Length: 377
Image (cartoon, rainbow, N blue to C red; front, top):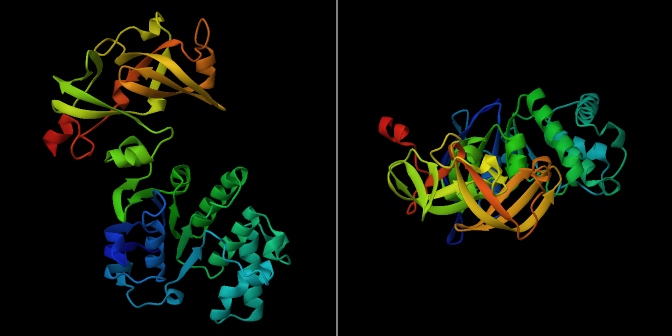
């Protein structure tokens, strides 16, 4: 297991900084997800760790050892590329075995190594086929086997599931997690898919415009986003944002009292994730109470403009005094609304769970800490 440290790493493409002064410590024996929009710098960071690119400023260190000038072959890494990068003229067996030609292994040792890793990633029955006879999921397993056959200390993965059909992604995620734990690898995965980052990453770095917006436990990027940019990227449907004014611990928008808010008085942006809102019908008892009442919720009246079934959930968009708000409700709860589930044009009440509300500074767009944390920090 190896700790990877990025110390002020910068890489430019002409006048543009693809990676700008990035400093991170990626934990040993864990998987770090580099997640963010395309073109944000994720793949560049992987290439810098691998030694396929050299940092123009800063250093990459493995367990404190400066890797500047150390060629990729000597870095003890395995790399899984987005496009598989398999040799089309070679069999699966030869593709997996190719990295072993640079090691001092006998033919018998190499064959045993290939069989061991092929069995581990479940491609032992495909060894005599060529890549063009494989499905996308099978090719990705072969690419994973080839990256692991050297028994590297570090496994780097660039969008490893981007070309895999959706039904097979869950199985491949489970396989990657199993392999990483079994071989006790330090893993780094670059992905634009937030669900993939959360499923595979023990920790995550939100990477955008060549910088790191937030780094920490994967769940924190959803539950405690450091900024509006992070809050918008993580979570689907996208978070609802509305301007509010905090007065004596109460978040207000015009005449609406939305929630109790333990932040400083003044203007703020309130973030409400669609899954943290609830739907009710006017006159329903569950819509009573209001902010400051026993229920700890605020109420926002609206009219349904769109309904989108999402298998087990239903996405409802309603026009309100705050603008359009998106609400995700379990489909069972939506269909159970009495006397009948609302349809486009119907009046609804949106209930705010004030404990889940997020608040951001209107100028810096950074998340505002609770007063109790601001006082003690």
